[in-house]
Length: 182
Image (cartoon, rainbow, N blue to C red):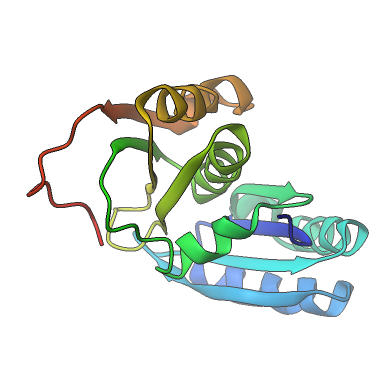
């Protein structure tokens, strides 16, 4: 199942990020999902709307704050499990194979997580955007080994800047006591 277009923009300044968020809200008919400070002293805004509105909002925010923008992404038809994983409702009691994608930017992680959900029959467990991770982000999924490998291995192919990818890890048979981030 798909939802409206998701947009995310992240700044290296909290003050500029708040000001730019005001601009993007005024620029188009969008709904804020999350807007907050993250590590290390950055700010991001995640929002939804129709594709044209999300693109217009991103454009207005970039015009206002271009030199402070770290990254941004527009995801038309985002997978519904993405929002559940962002708010901690993507947990699964059954630990099959685990796939982990770690990125340097929030936007890259969001794009990878959406692609993971759309690529194979896997469950997104968690998508953590920068908080408590020194500005990095992480997406964790579970499923059969082949599905997890297929899903996470798509990430390097879709990132426009491969330097945003920190690491990919697939754990085929995780120990039952393996702690994850949640």
